[in-house]
Structure formats: C-alpha cells, structure tokens
Amino acid sequence: MIPISDLKDITPASPTNLSSPQHVHSGLPIPKVNRVKVFSPEAWEEFVEEWASSLKSSYSKVRRFGGSGDLGVDIAGFCSDQGFAGAWDNFQCKRYDHPLRPGDIWVEIGKIIYYSFTDEYAPPRRHYFVCSQDIGTSLEKLLNNPEELKSKTIENWDKHCLAGITSTATVPLTGALGDYLDKFDFEIFSSRSLLEMISGHSMTGFHTVRFGGGLPPRPNPSSPPDAHQVHESRYIRQLLDAYGDHLGEDVADPASLDLHKGLKKDFLRQRERFYHAESLRNFARDTVPDGTFDALQNEIYHGVIDVCEDTHDDGFKRMKATVAQASTVAATSNPLVSAIQTQDRQGICHQLANDDRLQWMEKDD
Image 1 (cartoon, rainbow, N blue to C red):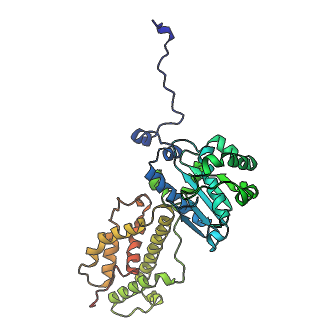
Image 2 (image 1 turned 90 degrees about the horizontal axis):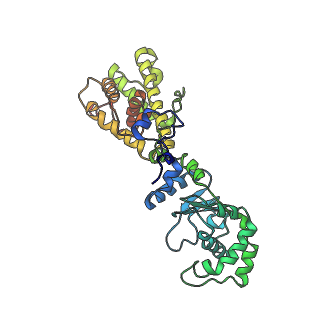
Image 3 (image 1 turned 90 degrees about the vertical axis):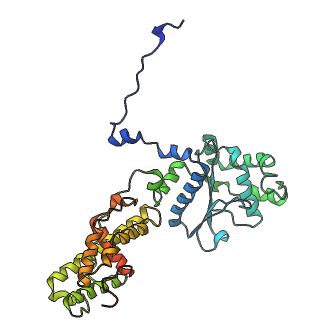
C-alpha cells in the first residue's frame, strides 16, 4: 500500500497576474497563437485570406490560388504589373496537425523548381512556408542552410517529387532539369512564423472580430478645414437651403450666414459633426471588416428617418430634430459601438444628407 506520506498536498500555482473582472467572467485569455493552432480547416482558410489582405500595402497586387493546377503557388504578392513575369513572392500556407517538417515541403520545392523551369513563371523572389502549427525546428534549421536544403531536395526527389509534382506525368531529375536545379538559388526559401502572421493580421480590419480584445484607441478627429472640400458640397448645400427656408431668404453660400450669428454657429457645429463622423469612417476602415461602418450608417438612418419625414415648420427645424434623434440611437449591435461618440451619430446624418438619403427640404417646398 502506498504510504500517505508519499502523496503531495494540492497546491495550485498562484496566478502570475492579478485577476480582473474580465477573467472572472470569461476565464484567462487564450494566446492568439494557440487559437490559430486549433482553427478548423474553414477558419484557417478564412484567417489566411484575412492575413493576406495585410500584404496589399507591400505589393502591387496580391492574389490567392488554390485547387488542382495551382503550380505550387498559394498566395502570390506581385511587385509590378508584370505579374509572374516580374518580381513576385510566394506564400505557401499549410494546415497540418503538426509543425511543418522537411518531409512536408519537398514536393512544394519541386513544384517551384519544375514550373519555373518550364516557364510557367519566373522563379519567385522569396518563397515563404507558413503552417497552422508553426514551423518545426528541423525545418527551420534546414531553411537557414540553402546548400543543405538543395542537397536534401535532390536526395528526396524520387520519393516525393517524381510522381508528386503533376498527376499527368513523372518528373525525373535528369538532363536540363537537373542542371537547372543545381543552379537554382535555394536562398529564396524561408518561413513566416505564426507570430509574424498574427502581427500582419493585426493590421487588418478583421483582427478584433476574430481575436477579440477590443478596438484600439481612436485618434482624435481632425478639425474641419477653413475651405470647404468638394466631398462635403452636397450636405453643405442642404444646410444652406434649410437655413434659407428658416429665414425666408436665399442663402447662397456660408459667407451669407455672417449676418446671422446663431445660424453661423450652428453651421460650424454641423461641419464639426460631419468631420467627426468622417474620422469614424476612417477608423472603421482600418479596424473592422468592410461594411461595418455602412451598417452603422444604415442603423442611424432607420433610427431617424421617421422624424426626418415628419411635418416640420421649415427645413432647419427638420434638420435639428433629425440630428437630435440621431443622438438617441444606441447602435449597440455594431462592432464600432465602443468607439462611437454623440458627435458621430449626429455627423452621420450629414453623411446621409451628402448622399441625399436624408433631405432637409421637402420636394414641394
């Protein structure tokens, strides 16, 4: 019988960080790398597509290939309009249940050798291997030793590449192809870690939705420029017509408001609100998926349209009532809700007026 003195007390380790209310509610956060490692095949494909969008700032064009006949190309980043005829980089993204090993890449290297030899494309400038379980140590070492990588490719050609490059023929490493491989620059082969992928992904609007953690701090909105910009001409015209309706006279331009101090202050205030909403639009473009800001605009529209189309004494009072109603629209279902301020809701009314979705003057006025 085991002596009880051989048993240890139950002593859970103390947390390395103080617990927060969020931890009590949701548990300790799972590191992003660990999340990626348990992605389903569908989630991995979605993540790769999202991450690839972060490459657009580095290349003239980024394209995804796949399925049969991909010629060893997964995600191609083209450096010019020449496409495969010019400089380009290849990102080979694999999903396995283990870190990427040398045995996983021989046929991929073989495809690059063979299809560049047959002039399907110029050899890529760089070829990066990426894996859902990251890059194994043995492969990382091999990728850092181009001469050994070449030697091992030749050694493994018949086992992995002879019948694996194409289903229509065998590809023996003989003659001109053998000479081509011998002169091929194996320094192009490298890797990208999951941490590097996640860092790139964090530069996209998909990151907070996929990994959580909240939106980044929002920059302070810029003040409206003194000179009115072309892109705000329609909502300004709508405002001036509404002021004119209230005054019973034509208001040709903003300078005409100098004689009406109250309306002048209101005009400046409405422009500030418009630019507030424009700054939110720009913030959304960089932090949340496409369509998120459009959805917010649509929610504000449906929250104010009944007030806008109600009966009002003049266009100015219609605008004021609509903007006031916008301040009450909660928009709690939108991912931007934590970044929205009252001025944004008000300014969206002027964005909608800029697109003629809201109109301050009745058509028969």
